[in-house]
Amino acid sequence: MITSFGRMPTSVWTLVESVVRGGSGAGLMGDSMLGGGGGAGAGGNVADLVMLLNARFAARGEDERKFAGFVAGMLK
Image (cartoon, rainbow, N blue to C red):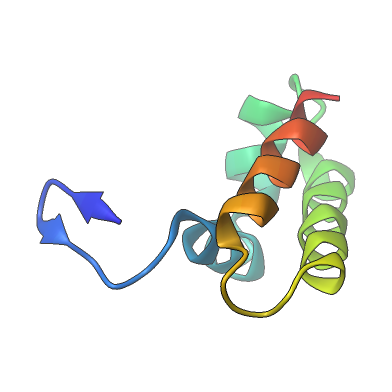
C-alpha cells in the first residue's frame, strides 16, 4: 500500500482487519459506513463480515477479493 509516508508492506485488507479488531470498528465504520445506525450492533456486523470473508478466502494472496467483498457487503 502506498501512503503519504511512502510504501508500506501491508494491504488495505490488513488495515480493515486491524481497525475492526482494535475495537474502533463500531464508531468508525458503524456510523459512517452503515448509514448512521452505529453502536455495538453495527460494529458487530462489520466484525462478522470480516470474519466471514476471512473464512471464505485463503489467508494470503486474496486480499483484493476480500476487500471487494467487504465493500460489496457494506453497500448492501
